[in-house]
Every structure is written in C-alpha cells, then in structure tokens.
Amino acid sequence: MPPIKRTKFKLSSDQLLEMFYWLKLIRAFDERLSILVKQGKVRSGVYTGIGQEAIIIGTCYGLRPEDYIAPLHRDLGSFLMKGVEPRAMMSQMFAKVTGLSKGRDSALHSGVNELGIFGNTSMLGSNLPVAAGIALTYKMEKTDNVVIAYFGEGASNTGDFHEALNFAGVHQLPVIFICENNQYAYSVPLEKSMAIDDVAIRAEGYGFDGVAINGNDVLAVYQATQGALTRARGGNGPTLIECKTYRWHGHSEHDKAFYRTDEELAMWKSRDPIPTFTTYLLARHVLDDEKLKDVETRVKAAIDDAVEFAMNAADPDPTEATTDLYA
Ligand SMILES: Cc1ncc(C[n+]2csc(CCOP(=O)(O)OP(=O)(O)O)c2C)c(N)n1
Image (cartoon, rainbow, N blue to C red; front, side, top):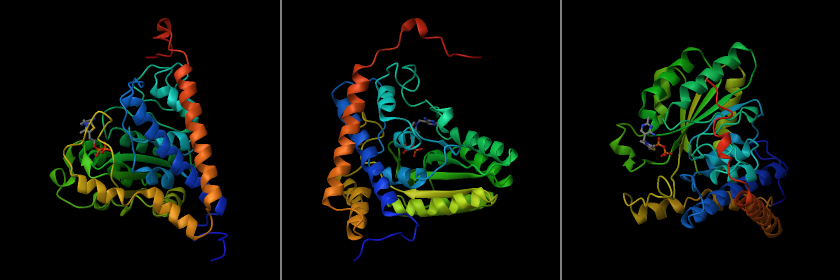
C-alpha cells in the first residue's frame, strides 16, 4: 500500500504522527506519575487517565488557543495539548513554585487563562455551567470560538450537568460536552447509577444531538469532535459526545479498585488506544520502526526532563502564601 497523503479526516502524515506523539506522551506522563506516587515522591492526589487518552487527543488536537477547555481531574494530558509545558505540569504535581499554581493547591484545580484552560473544582459537574457561561460570552462577543467541557458519566447525574445542558440548548451555545464514560464513578458501576445505557441520549431532552462513540479510538473521537466543532463555530449550538472508555487504574492512585474483576480489566486492556492507533499508522506507512523509536525517544526525554526539573525546583516560600489572592 503506498503512503497516504491525507486521510478521510483530512489529516496529513505529519499531523497523524503528531497525534501519535501526544498519545504516547500523555500515557508516559501518567505512567511516570503513578510510579512517583508509589515512591512517595509526589505530594498531590493523583488521578490518572491511563486507558482514556484517545479522548484527549481526539478532542484537543487542532483546537485554537482561544478555544476554552474545562477539563476533569483525570485530564492532565489536555493541559499539555493546550500548551502547558511538561516541566510546569510535573512541577504542579510536586507542588513546586514552578507549577501552575506555584505550589498552592492539590494539583487538580489550576487553570491557565492565557491558554484557555478553566481550572476545575472538586465539585464534579460544576465545571459544566461555567463552560456554558464561557460559551455564552463567545456568542455575545460574536466570535466563533468554542468551549469543550469534560465530565464523567457519574457527573452526568448531578443537577449542574442538566442545568448546563438545558441552558446551552436554549441559547444554542458553542459548547461541546464530552462525557468520559469509563464505566465507574469511583466504585459505583454504571448500572447502579443510571437507568439508561447511554449518557448521549440525555442531549435530546435539551434540544440538541448526542452521540455515543468508541472513546478508545483516536480518530473516531477526532471525527466526532470535528463535526461538533463545525456546528458550534457555525452558530448551530452544542453537541454531546459520549466516549465509551475505561480507566485502567483505580479512581485515584491510592484506590486499588477491588470492585472490578481482572477479566473486565483484561478485556478493556485489549482495547488499548495505543496499539489500535499504532497498527493503523503502520498499515498506512505513516509510521515505521525508525519513526516509532524516534517518538519513544523524544517522549522519554521530555518526561525525564520534566521530572528532573520538578524535583529540583524550589518549594513555595511560606511568606508568599497569601499573594495572588483576591476577593
Ligand atoms: C458533586 C460531587 N459529588 C460527589 C463527589 C465525590 N466524588 C469524587 S470522584 C467521584 C466519582 C466521579 O465519577 P465520574 O463523574 O464518572 O468521573 P471519573 O472519576 O470516573 O472520571 C465522586 C462521586 C464530588 N467530588 N463531587
């Protein structure tokens, strides 16, 4: 088969390789974090998204700097794709002065306004009305920027979720709701928290489209997101995309996840987004052994550098604990 010039998704070989780099980088970032937690070196609570990375690549790839994202605790990779350097992100996990919040929070609640990243709070689902609010601003300012808001299937049972979708539907706002349906809300399996199979159908109740897709397929997520972006930028309102996926680790790194079976985990590991995308790229001659090695070398260098930098960075100065506060 000759090398492809462009896929049906209008992605060039270089762009596909770039997506592959992000996929490998985000997996490596979380895997290293998990090891650092076990070594007792990280001060933050750590919530990895290992197994769910395709959602981040497919939704963040090609976003504009002006587009806002409202990520979840599990979406550290979206910070990287939106432009946060691995050094700063790792420093954040080490609560160092070089981190996003200069060592002031538990790593999960930082945002970066200049990069279009809204810092989430611990109240799950509460980022969604804020995302709708940012989208309202974009509509009022008559820009064609878009907001991408992430939430778990657990959060889709909160009032905030329903208020946000209703408001976005009524006002036809440029927001894309991305459900990371990883089958469990902490230890609660899907069937014990919802009487329906698909979160996606909830969109219909608010007057816009919802679609359920394979969240472990980078290009399926990308394709669905591109359609939603086109609609949102064209003034045609919100979309809900439910990405079916699975988190390989516990809810957090301190959760051993005894509530699920080894067989279930093994089944989902067989749907790992990395080999799926690797096979696709190899079969189309976008990737070969040399390029694969190059990506892996660059990823390892970036993570090693970030860890080294963060570990050697300064702790926050206690006398500055109240600077940057405002009321
Ligand atoms: C409003 C709210 N209720 C309860 C909690 C406690 N809590 C923390 S994580 C979690 C599970 C979240 O599951 P889900 O929304 O599916 O996201 P996931 O962690 O699976 O990505 C819960 C219930 C919370 N943080 N916020």
